[in-house]
Image (cartoon, rainbow, N blue to C red; front, side, top):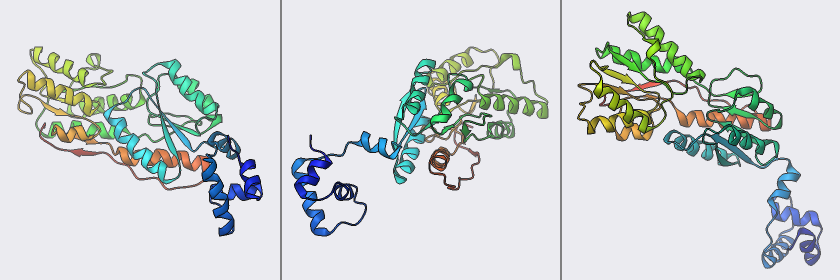
Length: 322
């Protein structure tokens, strides 16, 4: 394989001159540039990127560690990759399937200098396991975490969840049933607190012993619809942890001939494109802005910059299901 030394010898120039031509950085006489470039083309020379990364001390690659590939991640990943490209970075998606070992292996890539930083979606391991990798590069998470080693872009889900609850109450509903995601997640804890405080304020029974956790997929939503139709006195309104779960409920409800919103009102969470397709009332969770904030936080640590972050807020998007 050809290398810079061979090109320099054939072009009768210095190695540094060849480097400036390849990188298109620094002054080189036009005649010399053309001569060097001609030899590069004839030899079909391609720079060794690993060697360049090793020399520069960075890969220009950010790892996104996620347990799965969901509709929410599609939106986030698109926005993250777009802003990363603008600043000269690429993105590698590392899926873990909620497996602790796979998650650690993904973080090992930071230690092995295969990526410069990590944006983390949802953890499987305890934070203490993941924090130790912060010495190898910046780590930012989507989850709520209190850590001096891992940064976060979390939004206070207490406020977002309450928006949905108040909306249902204002629509006249008193038999409201909320559903939740990962039980130990601090975002879920905040949502449960919002539900408890809402019930306390409105003098409703929160039925904390009857809470259902760990709903993630549209299939989970379908199961809840099957549960609903069997109930003697089912709730007149349901608030789901994600649009994906809500759409599953809505799809199964149609098959079971449950009339929405006359028999049951439905609210999702995230305002993904699927919520618009299904005319689903939802809580807007500005993922494109969160994605940019996530990259800015990583970039600021990598480059010692202070790029400003977007101000984020939840909004209720009322559609046909309420």
